[in-house]
Image (cartoon, rainbow, N blue to C red; front, side):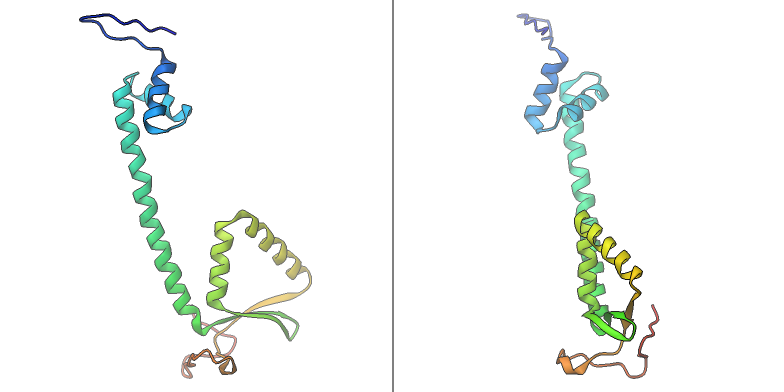
Length: 162
């Protein structure tokens, strides 16, 4: 450890590890990030702190914008999907049926969790191997009492224009 303190007119010298520790303690960064910032600033601790602070604010703003866009897209998909139903069929028999908006939420779950994505992939492979089909139906079942109204002009069972 190289550390010399002089009284007047000289600069305090610190080891690189001490500089990294200062950066880590002030900003809570890891060694790798602190070392990279220190190297980029030519060993200047203050400049490294400034660059890390500026860098820390950028991703949060970008993430919030992307997060808001994603939320708007999900809301739009949920509103669009209210008249659609997703059906899993084996031959002519309907095995499973849900509103498309629930399917959209399932898709968000797949995107959010790698474990759910793996489980979904395995289920898809098993379904294809056993001749299951996936259908998107635009006709609305009034017996469920959901309060949806069918657009008689534009809806055709089993067909959709997207």
